[in-house]
Amino acid sequence: MSPLYGFLAVMVSFTAILIAYLTKQFQNENSNYLSNNPMKKTNTKSKTIEKEKIVAETLNGRFAMLGLIAAIGAYLTTGQIIPGFV
Image (cartoon, rainbow, N blue to C red; front, side, top):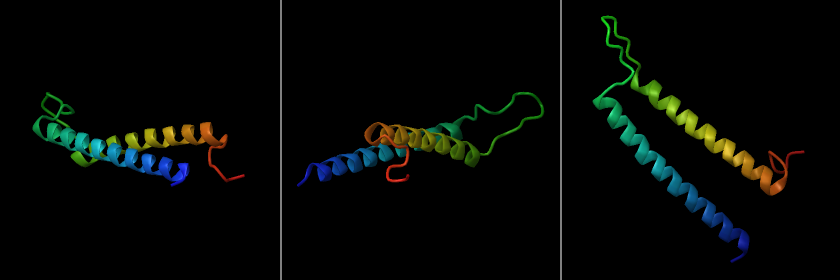
């Protein structure tokens, strides 16, 4: 087994663990959101934000941070933002 295969196996397992952790935390946030909605105003005209929008924005932010970390990692290891792209 070459060192590259070992590195790829570690990265795939790390990604799987990260996705499992984020999925669990995402489910916990959904259950907290369903139990009490902090985005609700208390005056007579109450505006609620749909659960799907909260979920979508949370996921979008997490994937944006993951992409930023991947870009920094690619730059540190290869010196290019998109490796192989000239």
